[in-house]
Length: 484
Image 1 (cartoon, rainbow, N blue to C red):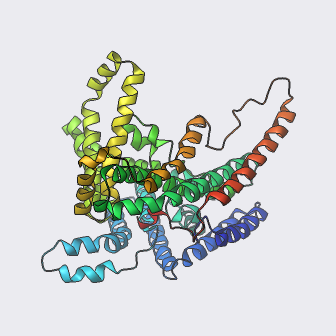
Image 2: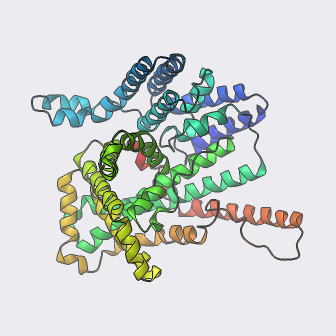
């Protein structure tokens, strides 16, 4: 079940009503959420809930054992054993094909390895479990003794398939507290869902056909058409993934769970460092907290080179998280190298920015970010390194300065509303937030609130109508990040 389907709407309506009716009993709410999550995952394949349940039970036992053991060496042994067991499924199902294909004598294993059924969302909930176990080991949080609470947290269906990756320190306690929906929570959650639907169904799904056309037929197209296709892919990726994250956040909000905001207008960034603070924030925080920081601490005697080395290793790991292919490694290391450059030249760039008008400096910095991101998107989207190089060669040809095909160029119009609305609403708590709009002087607070409710209700209704008429008339397209 995808979030943007009638089946999910019917499923969620039942879950939401039952959850709200049980607002006095947190344990019963968690039981409903656990059952709903397992049914939700079962709809993808009957074996997926079995695998997820096994991970939940194993990690629960290891976390409790780590907390109860007072000997440092034994605690560390338990942690390493638990991390290896939990990670084994992820490593084998996603990366065995790449491993076999690159080891002489094991090439014949590649075909069978690639046909392993990979549970959708395995990367996301595996990282959530690993983070929880590490937090228990570091004594940042206590091990959760109630397995129902813990299971409902890990399997929570809004973030199960594509995140945001939950933080045990902030999200797990919410599954213990009683939750009752308020108007402000409903207001924000509905706004997030509608904005997510717009990004996914109106923007991402509509331009996906042009993107596929450009990357498959690049050898037959001129450079300008392929270049537009690459830029459209970046927008498709953002609209698709952030659309899912917005819907996940809204759906969770209606169930009383506040998930982290996973995207904050990343294409407004003027540096790659800033971009990664705005893009896929939950993954960035996870990598920063569990890989980069511990590595820097362990190598602290290296001084600044500890940060350089840790950045490169972190982005190398991030590249493999995104996909088992050398094109992903190139994409990840490109970002790692630029992050290292920005770290080593921070003082020089600061002095340069003081000599140039901020508007000019920020504009050219933004242009560099967009061009660099587009260069990386070629490797991220291509099926192989040769395909990526072929796309780049086509863009770099003399045909880059010829008129693009109208079939591809017209899809740019689908992107304009996305960026215009995000720019106008960039200071809001969320994109559909209109509380900062001034209704007028001389109106009582109660009357102003009533007018605000009416205006927002009309806006939401208009938004639903717009989505209905602008979305593609076909079966719902799967989310791009499901493959990760």
